[in-house]
Length: 222
Length: 131
Image 1 (cartoon, rainbow over the protein chains, first blue to last red):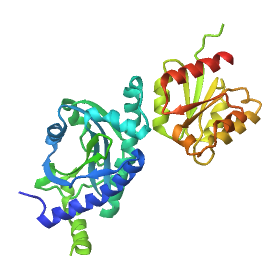
Image 2 (cartoon, one colour; image 1 turned 90 degrees about the vertical axis):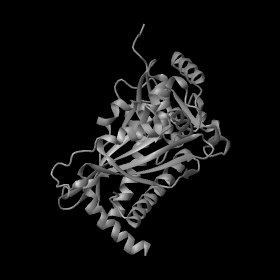
Image 3 (cartoon, each protein chain N blue to C red; image 1 turned 180 degrees about the horizontal axis):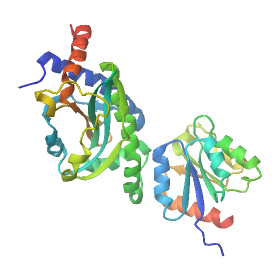
Image 4 (cartoon, rainbow over the protein chains, first blue to last red; image 1 turned 120 degrees about the horizontal axis):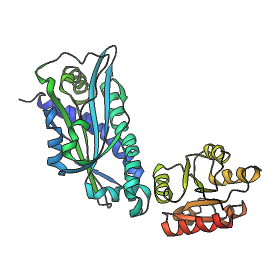
């Protein structure tokens, strides 16, 4: 059973689309290239299925940057989430070349990848979460982005949502263990780089998000 | 004869440029980094001071030329060789003048970005030896 009605799902995707529009603009400036976006994809899945989902998209060997965040609704309500930037494994070198404006020397590639990708994540994922939080009318609290390179067997811990100390995460419901996941695939035109931006949030936040989504529908989609 | 690793200060406002240069040089030299002109001037007076400075030309607030000018008028830093890093496009578009500007200010060389590792290493070796 879907957790959202069709119109709510469309509104949720539209909110994400607005947010990723800002990310695409930032990314485009960063790499001096047009960014082509696909249509956002929304689904719900269980927390333990995220790494399998990522594996289904990109295979077992994965490089990604992840940033945990919390949307905070004062005084004491919050939703935990995770934003992830994935580039297709063999394309990271091309992405770094595009960002650097030349060929990153092979002998430095591993070092540059490890050092530079968290910054790429910081810029792009923070743009995504901060613009989403503005649309939801919440504050946002982001952790430092982390770079992961390895196999999906080691991913579950890396992809876990952050704790919410001091907050009550809305009312626990049947969808407590469900995640609301949004994904946009993108490519850099003429640069042979493609990847995805994914964001997921605890399903327990749905009642709160739904009221924000309904407000968005009332003001933008009627 | 002195055996300590020579210290290179790299100054660039672009993180990825810093990463590429540090990645190339960290096995050969001790690396210091600065991301703007003020930081560069401060790091240049550290103890021990850098043996050579790689300085990006195009930076916000204080460009590489101004940093070089200040380094060369400060008695405690004027002896440190400065090599300018600049993009070929920046030069060809005239965004940072021609190479005579930096050489007149006291820099010893220009290295163009994207960096050719062999050229950068050879250039450093030459100017550290002369020093």
